[in-house]
Image (tube, rainbow, N blue to C red; front, side):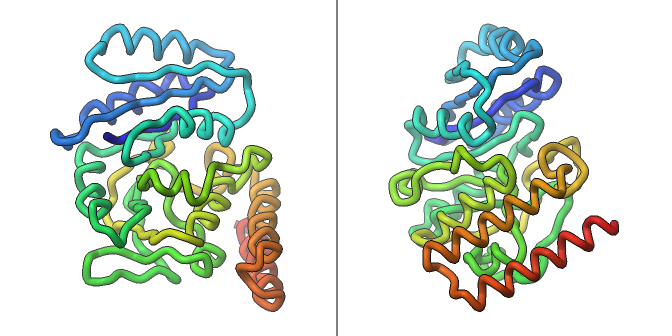
Length: 258
């Protein structure tokens, strides 16, 4: 079974499309447990979900309401309720293409793939990632520190990651997914499948155009926090810390100019 974690905040206009994209998955052999966490929405998101549940009683949907604590806390609440062998993340304004889970499960059932992201919105694999003969690009800490790839809604991973890595850092509001990926990379084999399987944010680009990523200053603070944490945990040396720090500042300056 796949547990699908959907954090929800004021997503009354998009949540149905997200849920429908799970319902329309072509993986007939796999069942889905959908956990929707309403993180203190002030619109009619909760009512929309409850109506959808009544319309689709055949779907296994768990609906959790909590006061507003942020997306990481919402995801963690869902992760702690998840019972599936595989965990999939999906944001309330994103949609899976019908073949997403069946394509990824083909690889996840292999012992050397613990975490598998995919592409979205027509993107391609870029440096420092490169494809192997299986159409997979290996994700490592060093590559993630250069370029964060593997958008949240594209990710599926084995349950063992919850046991060997834990959960999202609830104190972090920006670049929290990158922080989790970096921590996952310490004990797990991570890859990106070079197939476009998700439509995110209405098809917009990821950085600086929509959602939390639109706040470039706060996003940069999150990125610098991630670099510092990897240094303090002993996973990169002081020289590497300095190089990644300067590289991130350079990218930040270029984004401001653009």
